[in-house]
Image: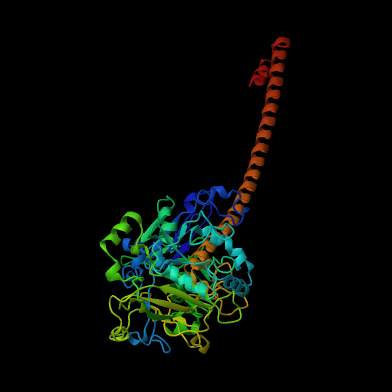
Length: 600
């Protein structure tokens, strides 16, 4: 999601000065079970909605609303490749992979609508391995990013009704993201039975790695838009500008302060000034692109495209990590147990989906998963399997192959042949690293994306050919001692004040599974960090105001006391004058002038 959070000013005196600007990030109002810090929110039953209604938000979205077809799980592969809702990005030609694709180029679908890429993905929802997050904590030297510390955030996200028992220790029940099991599941039983026969346990490995389910409800996609933003659109303190693309962050002078952003909308250029801070949430490709366009990044690269370096930050666009995948199959089956679209997608399927949210249209094409360790750490798997029970001779699962390859590959497979595929990807910290660079200084040119897959032979030992569309780590989070870190553990950009990043680009290493849930976690964590800073500032402001009120009250009381003393003095003096006036009137009428003076 292209995004920017700008300009939150807590001001108790003049609410009109309180203004926040966001592009493509949902500053979500926390749900009623937020349990991270009772001191921060002493009454969690109230949630944060009431507490932060004073924050006015402007949401700048480069696209529009998600399309209705985005909600249908079965169509997720058909949702990519449309310029109205997809950035239509692609890699540079690859040297060591993608040999079956035209020009060795891999499409990189990224969402361009409210809700971003969560409108396009396969809805897989699993968190990652505890060791992934403990490594984040080690690399940032901040235990707040450890699995133990992050678990409450994951629980806070979830409204869990998944494949296993609801465990309050590991799952949440009141969160905005519905995590559910699929009701249509061809060959799921056979897949699980085969795994058990091979000695693999079938259980919810929560303490090690949470199981995979989907982020959906009643057969419908339930992602960032439905979970967070849709409800917030009704709030009076949120304004949304669709089709507004942020093109630059403007820094003030030589101080390195993020001051404003430039964005375009319907051909016109606008500037939004930031009085508080800017938070970029533009994703693994567009977050580094936006930094680079703003003069923040490797000085040599910036000069090469005609941009004056403002902040030399060599890690911007580096450390690009993606999961590499090999699709294995088809495994031909004798019985009619898989899904064949021509045979099994019928008019009744449409009726089932519309009336009950069930049937093949409610299914994301994936069924059953496996985690395998090929090294001496069995609790930290490096190979992940997805089971895809799809028959026929369609090559859709392989991606956009070069002309003729599909026909040759599937020449012995009939259109009514039952089959299944296994999608295997290298999950745990692939060693190959890529880059994201500018093509030019034109903000509307797509970035140069080079995943550089299989540049390290260690990755080749485990995998063969392709990416998994899980890009991450191009603005990685790290300790102050890491020269390639772009943000610190508070998600603040190094060397620039009032600027943060909150998206998958900040992952120090990629998690060993689909990054959907972990990316939402980063948003949840960013919300906490930002609002905690605002809470601290607002507390200081309240203390200042209370001190000022105390001083003012003291001054008012002192004035009142002096007034009363003065009033009493004048009252007594007047009584004294009245006494002597009456005395002279009775004793010496000749002193009428004195009497008149005393009566004044």
